[in-house]
Amino acid sequence: MRVFVAGGTGVVGRRVVPLLLRQGHEVTVLVRSAEKAEAVSQAGARAVEVNLFHPAGLARSIPGHEAVVNLATSIPPFSRAVLSRAWKLNDRIRAEGSRNLADAAAAAGVERFIQESVAYLYADAGSEWIFEDHLVRPSVITASAGEAENQARRLVEYGCATVVLRFGAFYGPDKQSFLEREDSVGAAIPECARRIAGGRRRPAASSRPRRQGRPGPQRDRGGCRSGQA
Image (cartoon, rainbow, N blue to C red; front, side, top):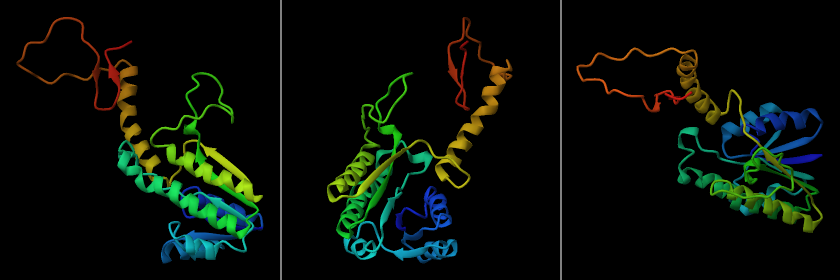
């Protein structure tokens, strides 16, 4: 099968493309730089320099492919993920980029379309199991993933078999946000372990009188709460 992959140079795409090639598929990967094109070529796939935000380029690139896989995202670094503005490019990719890709796939008569999404779209179910038909309640950050899903679903009207994959958390040695999260969590673990083991940090010398009474909860630099059972 001839497969067109958007996001094929990302963390997930770098795993997916080799798997497709090993299964005998002919793979074309969307790239935006000569460096990425070289890496794709060395992996055995064909690279095409085109931008998700350029409908005309996609309309020229997708015809001749039987399947399209959209893995394109731009997840911000863990240190900036709490800032809504840090998600602007990712939101644009999932909304505008996914729409352009779906339009090109429909015009080209693609038989199968696979869209990446996230499981965080689901409403909290507490301790209950969450199934595919569970209530969806997007947040500000995940709303664009819902838009990407909608773009993929409308291809059903054109006779295209559409699959939406709602992924969980990603981790790996080349996932930047995971490495940052691992560093921040790793810094807290030794201090938490010391607290659990019953260790106590020796207070610095001070001439100020100590307050009498039961100490309240305090937050250490490592992220643990002390003073609690």
